[in-house]
Length: 292
Image (cartoon, rainbow, N blue to C red):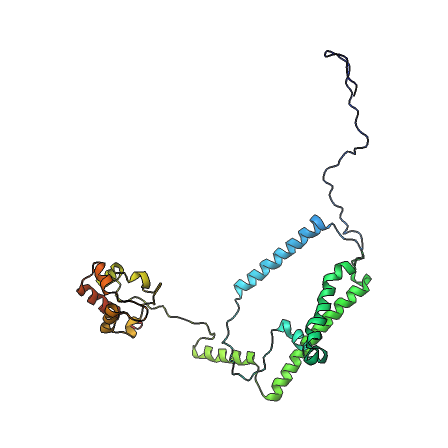
């Protein structure tokens, strides 16, 4: 830069740039290699965005299936049953693998830790062992051969496990557990009985909601344990209590308590109830029966 002489100099000022500093071009869009055989595209953002979109579509599909087709709850397993236990289908190949001579018995450590450790270790080291640029599977004989060998082994072991299970069941004259459950569910369905082991509770209605004793129940301290809807909070539900207790039994519990429940007579009196109110309340609770 040329400097002028004096404050009022009109000499032209020239700025000289540094030729060593290259002019930037801003953000450079990564090239698309998809048109070139054997090449790939930029991992960020092209490949990562595509993988993310595929993952979202798969996740939405799984969610739709789980909502539209909920998993059925079958009957509970019978520990005394004589059926042969079997793992889920996606573990059948491991189940069969652990029955091999060199993966069980005296070689159980080798089968469970040695072989599986080598397999998963090789899978973790695959990106570091296979560093070639080629992406076509037929140009990667070692990696492709190991992949197809693994898939063939899984399919073979799965089929062998299921075939042996069927033969063993046929030789012993047993019916597979899944077939037994399906037959039991079909039989119950024909009889109008539940087809699952889920507990199906019947909602018992409150008897005589408009009875003045309902207001007495809310006025007393009963609601702190049994709730205003009688379904129970800290204490048990009182709906249907008339099926097991009569008026005198309920009065005895109020006056003397039962189990962990202390006597509630004095507390009710302190809440403003009279002896007649407590008697009416016990009579109303005795009416709470499941069948009306």
